[in-house]
Image (tube, rainbow, N blue to C red):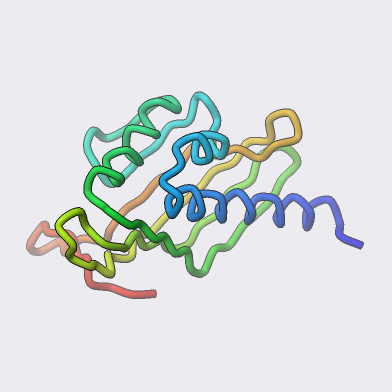
Length: 146
């Protein structure tokens, strides 16, 4: 039998899987169910922060405008669960076929996800995505792999 923390971790992992499935299906409503309404996202695109579910969903709409087919992969996800909050970190990669037919394997990014338990549901209250950068050149390093 699972402990409560193990059950919560399994539920959180299912939520992360929902992101991948929502992207593959191009389903904004499915994606919306994963995030808290007041989510704060430090996404890869400007501005520095995106506040609220509508702002977060606009980021996913941008993905759908560039990609004909989308895939999303998560690797090395580590989750720590508390009573009402949890956090996870790992690597994510968005890939697929662009609207012009070009296939791209994408790039790996670092991801941190912060969850809050709301009415027995684990929702993403904060996420941050980043790429490392070369201090000498000031440019992002997008060719690293986990």
